[in-house]
Amino acid sequence: MTNDERVKGRVQSPKERINNFLEVELGYNSDEAKKEASRCLHCKNPRCVTGCPVNIRIPEFIHAILEDNLPLAYEIIKSSSSLPAVCGRVCPQERQCESMCIRGLKGEAIAIGALERYVADYAIENNLNSVNKIKKNGKKIAIVGSGPSGLTCAGELAKNGFDVTIYEVLQKSGGVLTYGIPEFRLPKKIVESEVDNLIKLGVNIKTDVPVGNAITLDTLEKEYGAVFIGSGAGLPKFMGIEGENANGVFSANEILTRINLMKAYKSDSKTPIKKSKIAYVIGGGNVAMDAVRSIRRLGSEAHLMYRRSEEELPARKMEVIHAKEEGVIFDTLLNPKRILTDENNNVIGMEVVKMELLDKVEGQRREVREIKGSEFEVKCDMVVMALGTSPNHGSLKGSKIEMTDNGLIVVDETKTSLKNVYAGGDAVTGSATVILAMEAGKKAAKEIIELLIK
Image (cartoon, rainbow, N blue to C red; front, side, top):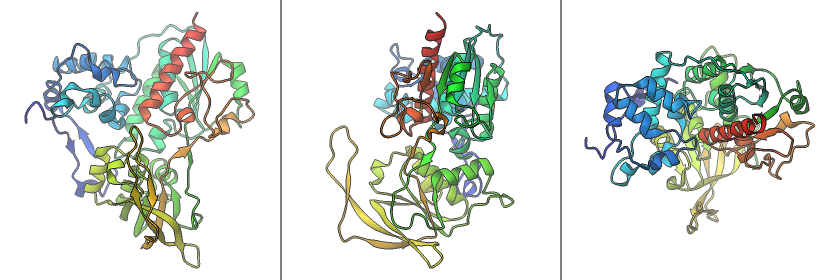
């Protein structure tokens, strides 16, 4: 191995992992982490930091790894990120910090995400999350939603002495980290550990509380100095084609929620998922990849159908590689026209059409169009729609908050049209990445601090 090549992390073999939901990537050990850290050039003007949405001081924590000072490395990361063990696993570093790495110009970029995970996991294993006594400032903040943006906002505010209460509609906190991302990419014990760290900071999390019904946004505005809305985007989108109401058609949200929250893959589950012989997941993002890889683990012949080419797949490259290793079949440049059913309204197949890419427009994703007369049928007994999500604004019931025609909350930075009410994450942008939601939560916390601490 040369310095142009990164240290390869250990992974479960495809033959093993296809039969379980355990984490695929096993992370670096000490020697591997040091070898990878030694590749860092410690640039005077580190572009990697500007590529990180939460501006982690990357060269500094990598240098601390080389110095065998992992507590310092963790302290450096934690000063910028509330969820380092999560980010080290699910952030698209290849499009952010690692894409800016000078090493990547002539070889492979530093494995920043893997090193962040290594430090964060060490901190969890060695209980480095002790909290210094924080002087309270007497200000109370309410947060709607315990996903990445809500948790990040809560952590930043708690560190600055605020009394923070999170209201979560589901029975477990974590939002998409808990119910959306499978165990084989993000173990729930990791999410629980990160949430526990926030509780140690003094954050109060109230689960099973549907804001908008059990308590209104108007009530929260009156009881708290400020409110942050981080309710995410949990409503699945469908295509509107014939047969979508058939038995055997699901949203990726339902499949992943049942697997992650209800352990539907277990034989003794109270809400088991139908065992499919041939399943098609429609879409090309990370959610589609999570769904198709989960279904593959249930023993199905699992297909991913995407209307563009593999080159345009928005999912992370490593997820695509892992899916192929696991036997997922990629059917690109195809799109469903209608879902075929039997006399009992059960899925028996799809009529699909071939697609062709149009000329590329600079700065835009390539568009596609149907090839007339190219329709044909495929057999299947399950179809899963993974076409993105839109916000569910039940928490805003009765409020006069300004929203776009697409149902997104309108903000100036993170400030909404309501006094002392802020918002961020997918509720504002639509479905996006964990780290961008965290960035919004961090920005909102800063604005709230500036508002309430004169």
